[in-house]
Each structure stands twice: as structure tokens, then as C-alpha cells.
Image (cartoon, rainbow, N blue to C red; front, side, top):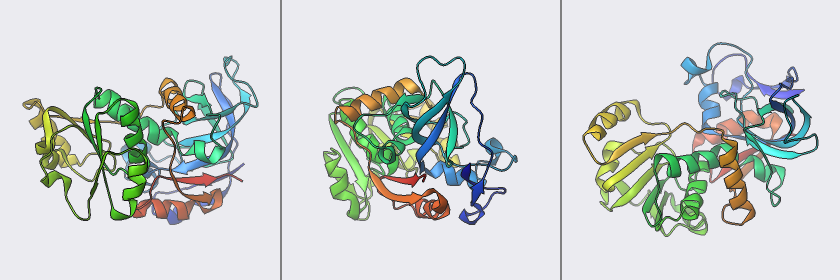
Length: 315
């Protein structure tokens, strides 16, 4: 099969496009003909070697976590999917494998695609939407009526977080983004928007129940004064120093620091699917690249200015 792969860690130049072995279906997995995947920051962080203790030294590696495609074979234990089903999901491998013509995914992580999305749109959903949901609902313990601030509200995770916060009943959602993305964030349902080029939200001591840093650009230390009593600061990839100091301080404070690694839970993706079909949540796509141009897509993602998701189209 055609795939994007790399045989050593490094910058985007290490990515190659060529033949790789087609994966074999497992008893509790589906073999999917991938029609679209996406690029998330974790993909190039793994590729660059930043997560070496987890990713190891076994090569070649195929990047990518999100897939949208058609089931071509099912494992012998599968009863809830069949060949021909259109599915999407976040791979349960932990390290990637989605940037290819075929991928295997656990039946517990795969979900039937929303009826109102095509493959490109569906591939923009899983990892980022699951991250946003689990950050707000599980780590943030968002209660109806609470005030939420999303830092990086136009990012892949942030654009879902704004919408999911509203779907979960947040009373007021504030989005932080650049000037160019203000109208986008408003269109996603944000009640207020802070332009970070004009104002640092940490210097305005508003009272938020939850601050979710979707882009890991702020810190617990700088943000805690903007939390209400009992507030929660949630982040995906915390600064190591902030993590150590923040956790120590939050033990003795009612303002808590919580971190998140997204879980590929199919039941959570089912909820997101229902919201999408009901028109409450939608994916935002910044750019599409053909699979063979994955290196360029990685470089674009690393610039950090994408509004929404970067999708790889598998031809």
C-alpha cells in the first residue's frame, strides 16, 4: 500500500511517500480503506523525537491518528461492523498509522460516520473533538452555567472546545485567538473573544470556572488568578516546570491544575457524532493536502497558525 513513513527522527524532510506493508486485520479490529486522515501537533512531535521515551526506536513509523474511510474486512470477533460501512475514529495504536491507504482500528474506537459529513470532514474530527470533550467534561467537570475560557480557540482542539462547551451547557464561553480568527471563533458560538495580539487574558483578572489551554501556550501559574474559587485549569501538553510547580501548588489551593491525554473512546465519539448530526458541532478545516504532500502539511502545522484542522486526502 502507499503510505507516508519515516525511518529516523527529524524535521519534516524525513517523511517519505512510498510502499509499506498492508496491515493485517486482528480479531477485535477493522481493516479500513482510508479516504482521509489529518495532521495533529502530536504527529510531528512524535516524528521529531520529542516523545522518544514513548515512541521508541523501532522504524519505519507511519504518522497520523485520525482516519475516515470504508471497512474492507473485520476480525472474527466483530459483530457490529461489516465491510462497506463508512467509519471514522482515532487509532488506538498510540503512535500513529493513519497516513496510509489502509489502517487497522479497534472496534471500540471506530464509529459510523455522521450522515452529514464526507470523508474529508469526518477525518477532521476524532482526536481533536475527543480531546476537547474529555478536557471540558472529564477533567474540567464543566457544569451547566459555568464560565469557560478557551485559549487557542481557533485551533483544531480549540474550535471544537468552543462548540462542545456550549453543547455541554456552559453559561459563557470566551475564546482567545488572533485578530484574523475573531469572526471564526464568534461563528462557533463564543460569547466573548479576546484578541491575544491586543491583550493577554492572564492580565485581566476575570473569574472563569474553567480555563482550557488547547494550545499549551499559557501556564497554570500565570492563569490561576483568572480562575474563580474552585476553578480548574486544564491543559494538554503542559510546560514541565509549570507542571511540577503547578501540581505542588494546586494541592494546597482550591484552583486545580489538570492535564489530559485524549482517549480513543468510541462512546465519546458517538456523542460527538450525534452533536454533529444535530448541527450543534461542526469541523473546521483550514487546509487539505494530498497524502503524498504530508511533509508540507507537517511544516504548515508546525507554523502554528492553522484555523481548524489540516486534512490529508488519500487518493
